[in-house]
Image 1 (tube, rainbow, N blue to C red):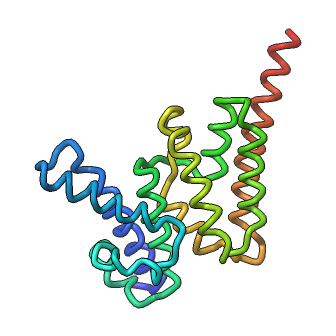
Image 2 (tube, one colour):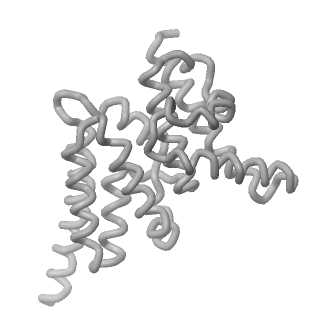
Length: 198
């Protein structure tokens, strides 16, 4: 098996382990559900911070992290960021960040400027600034997404890949997020103009 395939499979396992923290909310024992809530709360307190800054969550994080990813500092940091962001918004869907932000903007026209300001800050930030901006955005997005529904629920596995490719010279992640957002918002605006003129 190739190294890339091994890493990809390990990342899948990691995201599944995160999702399992929410899976026992209704089907687990009271003790298991309390343990999962406590785990999410611990991760939430570390949102947007580096792994080295959060030694209290090492036992939890390294239980979730597959052995194939252990010791790979870049992947550990990306996984840790995803774990802390997931704890802020513990639902999963199929949206990338551009799509999720577009869903919010389309659901509430009054927040379009705020959404676009957040998106522009994200698109312009460096890899070092990204954890801060993602934490701010996901913290803001979480209550909106719960009201809107699945259209605004993030695909955490995709976001993990987006972190890995953030510094790609072609800025592929940033261009995809911008494209998803502005294409959807423009399509809705164009549809609204057509309806208004008929």
